[in-house]
Amino acid sequence: MAEIGKKFWGYTKEEWSWVIQDTGNSAYSLVITARLFPLFYLKSPLEKTV
View 1 (cartoon, rainbow, N blue to C red):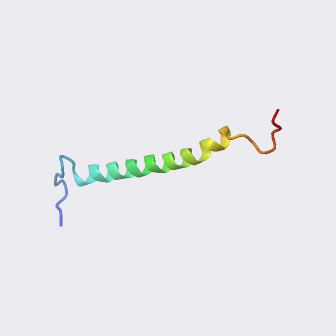
View 2 (cartoon, rainbow, N blue to C red):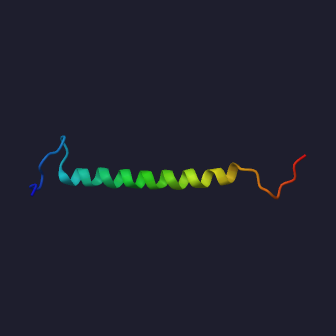
View 3 (cartoon, one colour):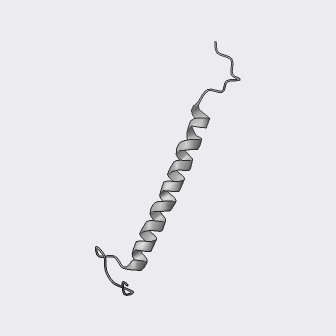
């Protein structure tokens, strides 16, 4: 078992946990944003075309 404070690529176990959490939060917001933004920019099927 890794001891508390052991370094892995210069980061402690606690720092790695923050890195993983931040990465997960960023990925989640990116997926939500990528899904919702096109809804605002697509033409509504109810709009009339000229």
